[in-house]
Image (cartoon, rainbow, N blue to C red; front, top):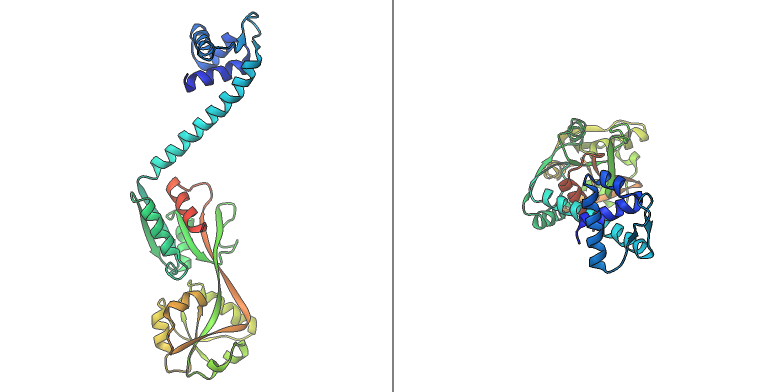
Length: 294
């Protein structure tokens, strides 16, 4: 017995007319009748009574067989879909954009595991500032992007889906010799006359820092910007300057020369995975699963 046999019986069961069912299946009436006979002979039971040629009567055995035929054909379709997805996952490249946080949040490890499980898939990662990544998403040149605090006014929620990957807290980084390093937390009034060095605009840090200064009612004196955390720390070492970093991002770079201090009113940031709605390839969809689960 084949899947075609099961499909033929399901159609015949629903239409209850051999001639009409044959038309629906694009086979001859005699071919359909032969399929039915072969199935009944194989099963050793009558599935359909053909006494009334115009309106077939389904036997009790036919009702039971119909339920199982539906289950088997549905499972077969699922099998076909999964095998097609597997074939799609055997080759290709996933184009990902991210703010530079892959190592600090364990995302590089998840990416490595994905590549081990799918050795025929390649990943092209571009680590850029948030503004560039937003433009690339809107231009449909990225499969996925990892960004901070994406707002509805930045990307349309009708066109993009967003998943929170992690949360982090913006904190003040100070040289251990800085007078404020002795405090357990920092208030914005403590920073009013303090020179600042910062990650570049688009980093997420720059924007969050600006929000906090704006709320406090004064403007930061930003002396220097750079895309590199190591450079930031080198610039504030042995000075009275400060910088701002997300705590988890800063941890790998911290040495005994520096301390992290939270704000007295915590400022939390959301690391998000953003992707075009309805346009994910099978490979990108599987990669998304690796990032968001476990």
